[in-house]
Image (tube, rainbow, N blue to C red):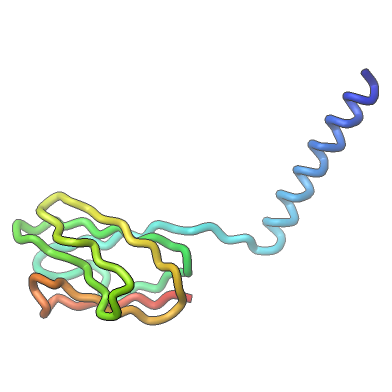
Length: 112
């Protein structure tokens, strides 16, 4: 029984040490960013994110909209009023995007 308790304490201490080491190393976690589409514009004209982050686009206009990357890296598809779509940024770079229904609506994302 003593060995089981000792073994459990060792496993617990090892797990705690690993968790602390990850925190100390600056381990980062993906974040979700929100961009509203309202009044024929994107609420955040220039967004800075990290690779792995997600961006959720929500359309609040009566007209349909998209968030479509010029380089083809993401596209929400056509969003009706009240609909949302989430995209994940998988590479570093600058991504200009627009609404395919209303091409004058433009914004950008920078990922590092």
